[in-house]
Length: 111
Length: 113
Image (cartoon, rainbow over all chains, first blue to last red; front, side, top):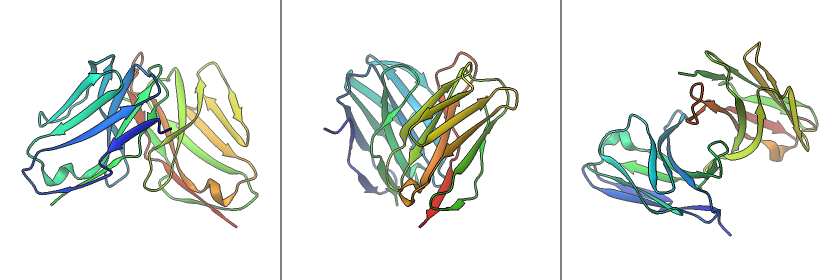
């Protein structure tokens, strides 16, 4: 029944490691997003894909690379993790480019 | 780009009262504005969308107003309940013609029984 799901829910890793977060939506939406919510609770968009094509790429370090194998999946790969990458990462999808349906979030802690 | 201001201080109210949260924005007037609810440890949940040509929108105990002259939206919860306690986020397009959503920091609402 889950609309937008993310794995893992928690991710604790060392600086310098590479990690991936997976996202899947079963809502049939064409557009998917990645957001970052920092410790001050600001929610900022990172990327957006529409039908597997990148349409939004905000100022995000090259170490972050999204991949959309199909319309229902948008994964986020992060290379060479840094302390400042610690945050909650949310995946979202939308039927139009307006209302967002968010996943439960992945809490990333870089030590 | 758009700047969104929401009261960073928590709003504490008594059960049964009406809660009113404010979202102010600068720069251009957006074509629409959205309100989301976020509970601790969870993702935001969409509540209401109001367009620039709509003065008011209602959904059950929720009411949103949109004043493009004041550059402000008010979000009301009538007959508030402890279960309404959460953080409420305002969101609008980052700039004219853009679909990139910009979120406010949110206001925490605490409803006391």
